[in-house]
Length: 518
Image (cartoon, rainbow, N blue to C red; front, side, top):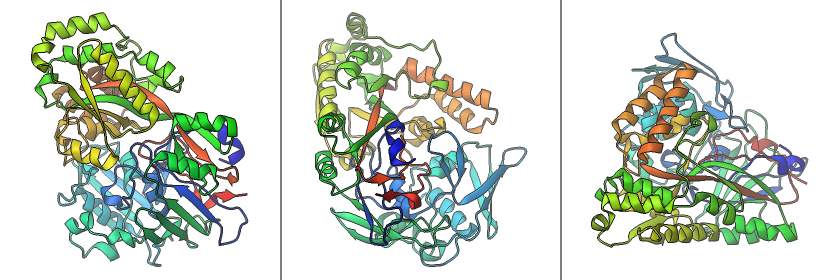
């Protein structure tokens, strides 16, 4: 979408990615701020260990599939087309011809097999292994044909492939799998995307140069520079000064820009559900009445109105897309009196022993700090004491993966296909195997997740996910709060940029080869 229509774009932020020049010289450079927003993959450029940051990975690697800009329809990236067999247990993928690696070698079905086998290898400990659980065998039938055999139908695979960056077998196959996860091979990666890796200065920036042999045509930009900022305020100042052309913004920064109009702002629902999560192995949260009471104590509508300025809407279960949320769902409207009664029934004073609960979060912007302080006050009013702890994203990830936490204030991307929640909610995928960081363990939920993954009939599949919504609404393994808008800032001279709300910062086709600066 062109810059002149940007303000009409629905956009939300997780990864920074933006543009450079139409008809400009090869020296023209677009400078994007590294995503310092929640869920970003700051300073992590190894796609094998990625859980976010996809729109930047897609600048130098390619995936089999990607969503359109509206996150509605999956189309091919490296895959030209794909078909399931009649029993949905064989998936055949036809690759585009003529796609080259940055070193000039031809990308083939062997590279796809190599990459998918890597993800399934236990030594890789990939967070996406769970998405390939049904895959029995991957074959390279010929140079352009990949045949995937499944032990059970899995209609969610095209969605899963939007997360998987295809890697070059000819350069990485001889390296032990564990080394691919932990070594620094990615400091000079060879991909197949529109830009080639050029330079990396830790704590400063990554420089990419145009891939003139890109299969959709050479980019109009000579370079794409992704600068790293430790905090969001520095990135916003750089954007205002014209040092960069794009960055994620907080609501505070959007308000500050209203007077100066130093840059354009794009806003839209983030598709990320903010929630209060529990360590479900902690006995203090075993009684559902405790969890219900805490949600009833939080006046979500007041927080949305007074802190987010209306730039959010309530969430009622782990799924946020309207088609999966039953109309008669329990909305847990604020009721402090009922919250107190439930805590009394559950014997909260005896359970908690008067000790405050640590509330861990990686959200460090002022709006989020105001939210946490308000939630802390609302919970205290019904007898639940919490003590906030603000950390950076890497510390948060290490802490929750190790299970050394009590409660969190965090966000979970829903995405256009609900199967993205499979490894978040399935009991088999607690870390390190998957992303079930809250240690959810509900057998009925596990069965429904399998149904949603295998069911080809869209109506039946939708009903399975509606049931998942109901269960997460009644049993509350986490407390759903709201889906807030996200904001992107763009320099006044940016045009031909595509940027849209995307959990994990990507998984949609943004055509960076068309980006330009006036």
